[in-house]
Length: 183
Ligand SMILES: [Zn+2]
Image (cartoon, rainbow, N blue to C red; front, side, top):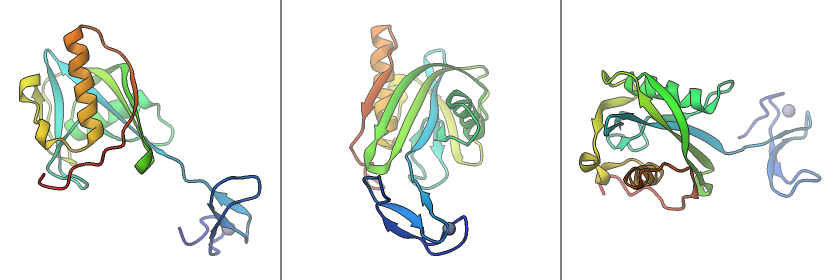
């Protein structure tokens, strides 16, 4: 950040009075800019024993497989964001259910909120951010081609829970980096 979005004066980075970490501060209009973690909402949408995955058409990790998920917009709930992402990325109508994974990723200041969901219609299709979409059973999950450690972890927890016959809510931290491209 270089300039104040309020008055267009240059901003500086320093610790404001009463705070404990550096912020972007505008000394011209006394505005402090707080940069906080971003929430990514998504779902594991089930159709029988299969779940919906999307192959990314956009960076980062273009070409890799992921759950339908994306940044929350202002003014929407997390379940609504998850349903919207399923529609945008896979033209999928879903009924969002229980919270399944709540992952903090401190390294990149992101929080993943992944719900269980019921696919209402198996007729899915790639949206503009997907190269292709599909329904996968456990044996056909492309484990080596998943986009992010958070997605891999969510799928691991999902299939563990499914084998147990009981779904829980998994609150975890993720510290691993995504593998390099082509790995
Ligand atoms: Zn300003």
